Amino acid sequence: MKLGKLIFGTVVICLLSTSCNGYEKLLKSDDFEAKFAAAERYYNEGSYSRAVQLLENLTISYHGREHAEEIAWYYANALMKEKDYFTAGYHFQRYVRQYPYSTHTEEAAFRSAYCKYMDSPEYSLDQTTTAEAIKEFEQFVARSPQSLHVIKVNEYLDELRAKLMKKAYETAYEYYNIEEYHAAYVSFQAFLNLYPEAQQREDATFYLLRSGYLYAIGSREDKMKERLQQVVNDFDKFATSFRDSKYMSQAQDIYTQSRAALAKIEESEKVK
Image (cartoon, rainbow, N blue to C red):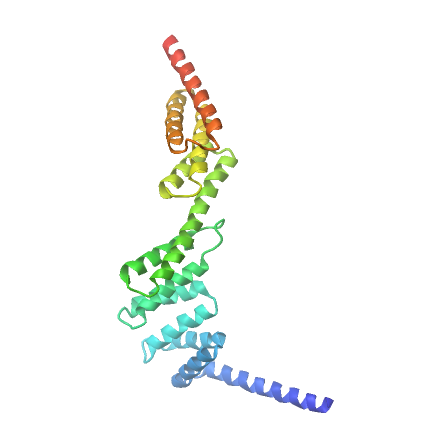
């Protein structure tokens, strides 16, 4: 029994060794047709790692030759299957540029954007890739409005925009939290301008008001009047938009204190 297992194991090892040796020889081979056929077979079998190596080799060595378009298409897709979304996205973009009239061009454009979507990080991290994914999806819809992907693309866009919105709000609130009130005010204003329908609109409008007030009272004397007047204006906007706000009592206190500080400044100006 043990001898049988040993023989079986030896046979398996030999087969694997032969397979590996054959694959290594193929990688070093100059036989284009054999390489391409093997890459295609590995891809169809789901052996994407091996397909990627062969296709990468073919892409470098046989650029501009027969089957170049097929190689580019398989290579980008194999990279995507391997979840190397950054590299796959680059090669899908490249495919679109090199083969603008291919039957795969529309799909390549979608997959380029999709790879950026998949590569988009958590909202707390840098969102450059998220912004790039949004731009590519929007361009895709503009170029291919009848595409079957459009419904899904709109779902992806909603998700990506929500991530940017959350990032923008959290960034503004972080400035507020560390008492960088001017940066907080500017960031909350930008958030409200960019996302007028945001769920956090009430919170953002209040924290903008409070950031503006705390920034104003810490200002130089020659700047304080102008900034306190802006606080009064911001309170009017807040009170108009959120009459029943949970923050109304605090907002009214800020308004009262701002008006009192303004009156004091104006009285001081009269004395001068």
